[in-house]
Length: 279
Image (cartoon, rainbow, N blue to C red):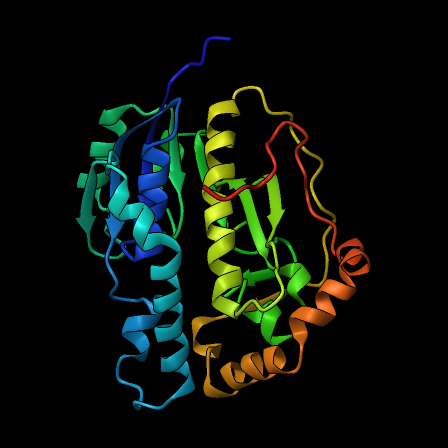
């Protein structure tokens, strides 16, 4: 069967996980990355917590996460050619008229977003139903910031995952294409769960990009009482609670109850999308 090349523009960040993501997509068969716009770290958690006291849990968690990212992604990035044609811009600059005009002129088949700023008009209007996003979290259960952090703080690993969706004018309100749940293994740390999910996410995203023209429209989840958090909610107490949960056997308890827990938190599974598998 002849594979039609999908020409894409990527909108993402510039931390190691974002570098892995764009490098991985650039090396996928059937995908050509015309350009990647990598936004800066001005509003990242690392920047926000850099002025915290040396021993603060907020700062330690961000540092531990960065070390875990190196373990998961650094070797891949070093060993694979970067075919993503990156351009580095300030946070939020993706909506500037100059950038919008550049993207429209590239005439991609799809815009592919992960970890970028909120996209505004007129960029949205230029690519109706051709603008994809991955929300790290399971909509509609958790919204806002830290949507895979807060489920672990709340002792609910079943709500850690990724939601592939179309971008619309709302915030994480576009039609859901497919969802995956995080793979949790014995002995996992919070960062290991998150980084394994990102690895799986990149592989699944590539499959969605290649098949986007033929994927069936999925029934959307029913509204549920949602939990919404802001970046300002990320405080010392929540980080302490996170690590107390893991020290108290959260992973082992979850794995013992995983079938029942997943049943309580159904997700959208598109039958035409490949199962998650690490790159």
